[in-house]
Image (spheres, rainbow, N blue to C red):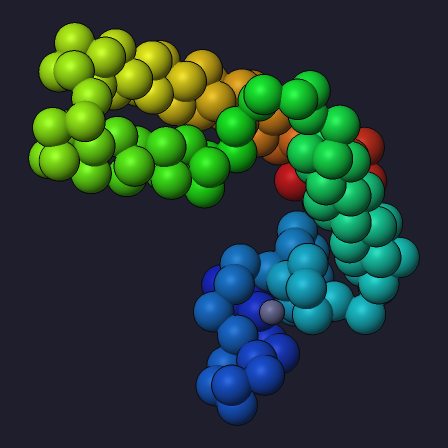
Length: 129
Ligand SMILES: [Zn+2]
């Protein structure tokens, strides 16, 4: 017998609205039988976060974070308004910033796709699909 909704009570005090696991009354987050898998998912999430932090620390000199890029754009806008930078230079900065963001977003999407695939594989091998 498969319930439509997880039978657990969420931290909010309301019934959990998640889909239960196959042939189980609870969702992945509330099923006592899934405790080990939750720990593994959590550990992998922590690894992914620390990999990101490590990657950021090892950025080569001259590579901008998004915050730094925002700062460069803000300064360039101020310079344009003050007349201390040529419009063609500002246009080049804006164009490069767009390219930088596009490349960063593509890399972030690739990372997410890889992580989702890993989690799907993990869930499939544990029979939790
Ligand atoms: Zn639940």
